[in-house]
Image (cartoon, rainbow, N blue to C red; front, side):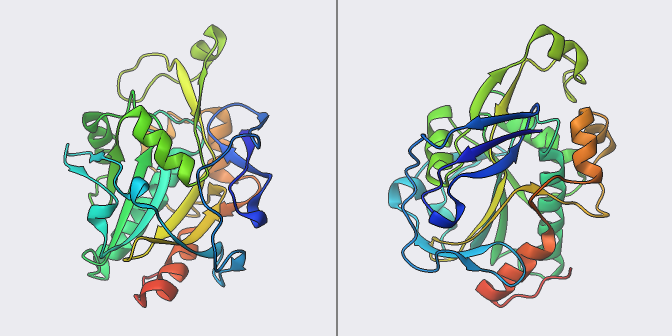
Length: 271
């Protein structure tokens, strides 16, 4: 599994090795200057259910970045003000981590729907792969999960880079060798060899209804007994299958999100 170190602008999390999509490689990116401001309050305050509480108002230039969802509808984080938003990063071509991320986010979305809280809490996966993850592909990916209770979003390469740079998780493109193309499973949608990967730290965050960044958890997702679509399971690489069975290092579960949402919104979601 590829891992790399990020400078997040948060003292507690500086120089952490985070999991990402790809091969087994440690890449130092601590020299990358994230635009994320150091949180002024709540820095390093451990959340009882996992993760860390923050209290950082998101700047207008980030809130106003244009995004487009799986149905081709344009929106911004600013337009979601008034709702609490659970956000994570992913890409539909990932063969190691992201299918599990999406399974967890699906389950959070389903729990929100069951609690009849969809008008108060939104679940949002934002891609790091602007080139491939256009609305039609995002929709096809979501259709594999047979539920519509969360949103998948993309945007331009520039806008996505700005967004994930702010949240301390810039992505980096890595072209696959011919050997890698031949050995990795073909793309789940096209059946063609996958030509590149986007290295990225794995994280999940919560932004409250006032557009303040309130919570962060780092690491690969742990799906527990939750199922991922068979088409995506067969698309996983050997490392991806290992991550599915036993995530390495730091990992997050949906119950950590439920706990944080309870503290932030007062809404109880089933574990």
